[in-house]
Length: 108
Image (cartoon, rainbow, N blue to C red; front, side, top):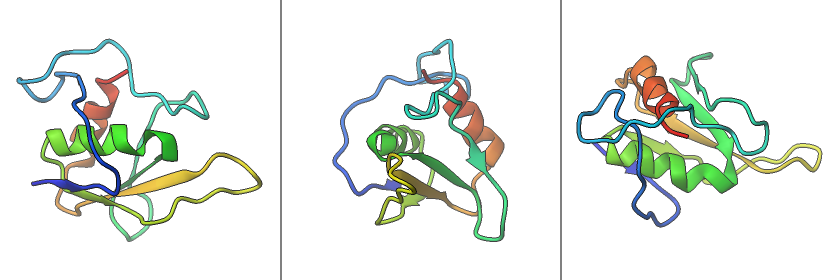
């Protein structure tokens, strides 16, 4: 399984909460603009997705790809009322949103 990314990727040290080959971190992944935890959303009919600031798109997609989570990023990021652009990462319908959330929660 892989995550298709719009941006190039670089190595990323990530948590080990779910995956034995990874190092454990002590805090959740934080949205750089809101200072809130990055969350997997399951509302609606489109399947699970993650909304992140465009500046964190590469970090999150690399994390997902390294952990074989199938996903794809929307081609365009959205900015409302001059706020920072938000990118949407769509997760495969067959993924386990709770496990993806645990992965996100294991990374600073």
